[in-house]
Length: 481
Image 1 (tube, rainbow, N blue to C red):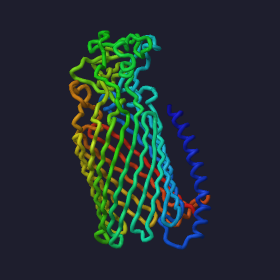
Image 2 (cartoon, one colour):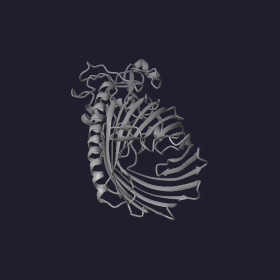
Image 3 (tube, one colour):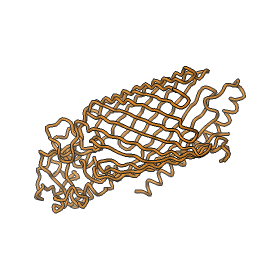
Image 4 (cartoon, rainbow, N blue to C red):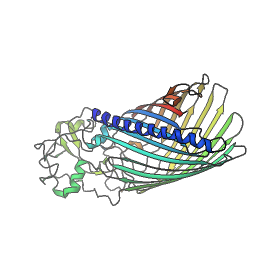
């Protein structure tokens, strides 16, 4: 699985690198030709710039949403990205952002947790929410492509921009675009920005195997010879074989679209040579299929049914269970509309030529019952003109959505339900640091490209529900001479 992922990532990286190098050599000739025709005015962007970015994310936890709020949450993600900024003339910049995100997920793999099927496995089958499976959903690659265009007025007091992009993976695809307008005045000490975005997304729903077979074959899904569960023994909590399991609450989707519309306004003011602040307000509306079709839900007022080793049922919620799986009562159901309203504040204070304090606060609320607070502090420490170290601390807390309950605690009479701990009440702490090297003269050359910056960031994340993760991010920025 890892070898397959590395091979795919390697091919994509080579294609992206070839594309960008060709783009740059053409861009270099065009920029030089354009320079000879235009009268001098300081450019928004002096020359072509290229950023190579990559990150690695590793996560562990015990509340997998795919298996109803318990189970293995191990996840690894590798994300290389290339960003190209190309000055069309003194006032206009075109940006291309191409990236992939290749992940393996123990949680997602358990959309189909069964290592054998009745139809092809000789009548025996077992699985566990604590053991990763090997189905199609165990790994995936998200590909994203985005283009943006920015224009600056001659006096550099007005900026317009527009963007268009798409992303796609195995079970989800998205297309989106937006525009923004920025006005500066008061000798550029005051700034006001308006921004709007639209995303038109679509699920290609993958649902848990037991629910899928019920949806396909109806009440005969355990006796139909074509069914995945033909010949498999389904047992109750006492370990007795039964044919009573029926996820009858499941109803097929009437729509697989998910659309998001957002508008934001931000205001920034330089108060003194040392102090700057900014505030922003966003308004986001999401409509459509807002739940994840792969995530199971269990009802406390329904009988429990299992496939696997009956002796492991009593130990089901322990990671020691490796041989029995609880069949879903339904999948996650959430309202078809969500309205989000974040309000934020940034304050930056220049202490001296070595230290700058950056602070950030955001309050968030939505119509699902979530209220959250985010605090973040950064203290960039500049050793000289080239080296900068930035310690980072972030605290976050939130209340739960109105529809959350832990594993096997929902009522079947409810209209909406989720056991996704991302929607539960929790707090988190994130501690990290970044190290940046900047060479304003780009003295190190790679072909016709000068190295502008090198950056490395490490962050460690811990959540009150036991989820933990770390992420390492690196970047190289080049400019075309």
